[in-house]
Each structure stands twice: as structure tokens, then as C-alpha cells.
Length: 240
Image 1 (tube, one colour):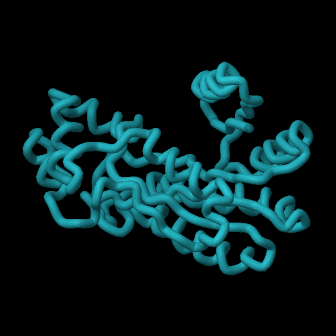
Image 2 (tube, rainbow, N blue to C red; image 1 turned 90 degrees about the horizontal axis):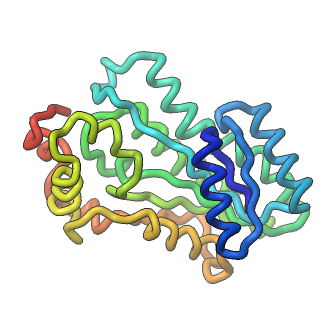
Image 3 (tube, rainbow, N blue to C red; image 1 turned 90 degrees about the vertical axis):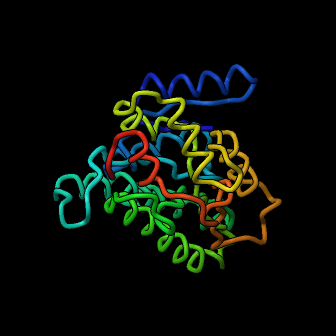
């Protein structure tokens, strides 16, 4: 397995954790918004493993500034589109030519429930994640003749570093996350990263061999209506 990240310390830590469980893993530092770095990363992985069976496009991030579409700066918009959408395109473009001759591959794109059921205003992020869905549909159709499955996971509120920009602004971060899960989701809790990983493992396995072009929400029941993130932010003294 190849762990790819722009953050060397975190990425190497994940690779080491995998190795500690008796599995082979390498870490490759790469900015997946840069075509040259993505190309070099793929060539390096191929030199180590000889093939790429599975690609998980998991890079992403959200803007700290919660603005309406007309207020978002061009610089912020470009950063969000590059990180959340262009990165998926670049990685697929680099990997797919090596899957096609082998007539096998699994591509798993991480989108977001926010792009179909927005909890607040973050247009660049939501637009990019919606773009991931469109790209998933297109690739699923184009690559089906080569036995390459392309699907997307749409996480809801998950306890990850995604929330860090907001947690820095609230007085009680644990209460805030508890409220997000309790008030926004029918299951009344935030999800854990392992629960997203479970869906990814299913899509990466041959158990999903007849599934392509699918969107799998891992969202605790969203978009079933409960309460919006905007209302929770207001309860914590913030405004979306």
C-alpha cells in the first residue's frame, strides 16, 4: 500500500501503523494539486509494487471563511477547487492508463454530503465536492468496458481534522461535535473515520464487483431533515 500525503509526519505515521500490523506500506510525499508531483508519485509507486489496483482519492479540505458565493475570494475559491476536485482528476488521469491494460481497477472518490445537503455556506468546497460526483459518473461510464469500478463516498459529519477550523472558534469543542451529531443526524451522533473506511473497504473489494457509478452516503441518515449546522453554529455564538 502507498500512503500519499503532503504532510510527511502524518503520512509516514499512517504507513508505520500499517507496517506494524504486518502489511507492506510506503509513504510518498506529494502535493496532489500538482500534475508533475502526481506523475512522479505514480511512477514511484509502480516501481515499488508493479501495479496499482486501487486508487482512493481522499485529499480535501474546507475554507475557514464561511461566506456566500459572491463574497468568497477568487484565491480561496481556486484553492478549494484545486484541493477537492483537481486533485481527483490529476490522480485518476495518472493512474487509469495503468489500470486499463490489466482490465481491472477500483477508484474510490471521497465527496461530501455537504454538496447535496449543504449544512451551511461554503460554496467553493460544496461546488468542488459536487464536481467529484460528476467526475465519478463520467469515469464510471467511460471505464466500465475495462472492468474498472468508479464510485464515490459521501461522508456526513465525521470526527476528523476537518472540523479544526471551527473548533478553534467555539468555547466547548466536545459539546459542539456532540451537538452536530445529535441535532443534524437521525442516528444522533458524529461518525468515526473507521466507518468511512468500512465503506471504502467494501468498494475496494470484489464484494462490490457489480457496483459502479454509485454514491454511498456515510452520514448517519442525512439528508433526512433534522436541524442545520447553521442553527448549531448560532447556538455556539457563531454565524454561518
